[in-house]
Length: 250
Image 1: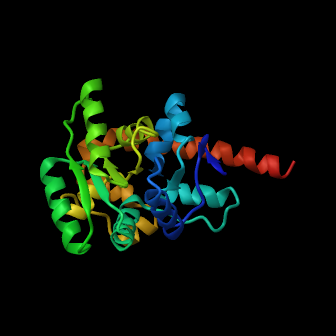
Image 2: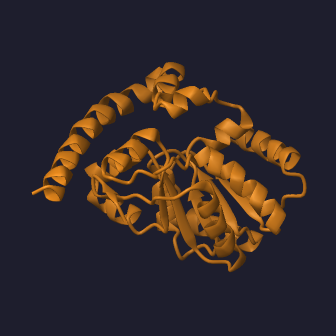
């Protein structure tokens, strides 16, 4: 499996991801699916323990176009983006058709309420077995154990987790084998589906400019992230690409 700055990135697509998730869900398997962008990769680059956890996930999809371009630069010409919010929509439709129970963990109470209403309207007949908006603070061990019990009791077979990066990725990996469900860290999918935050136009997404749109809409929250991570990602991957070229053409 190819690596970008030490993070194993799957060469996948929406159909393959959905097929695997539905199959795992029907068998009540505990599985983890991550949608990695530059932020996720740089958090992993900066924190080896987080990187090790990330590399133990069942699927780490390239969520952002910079990672797709990086894969192509490493010789994987057929690499495509598998965007968390779009994958969520695909899986919701597949879950409804397959009679697979879904759950949502994360988001604000108002966002979660709107999300559930929209999902019920858009995917008529879907079974939402679990929904929880946890407090913003970290949960203590007893609280976390109660959340795990509630999720298991609900019978949710696919659990969408939207807690923000890297909290959601850490949560998913920490609950691997504790929850018999396919757990997906889906980023801003809750906000985008509920229409509580604007989504970048598709042309910006295709051209790797989604970060510009998000920075313009949330400059205070995202300035530090983009200024810290984006230039370093370009520099570090350039060095990886040079090493890759030297190794391929000694």
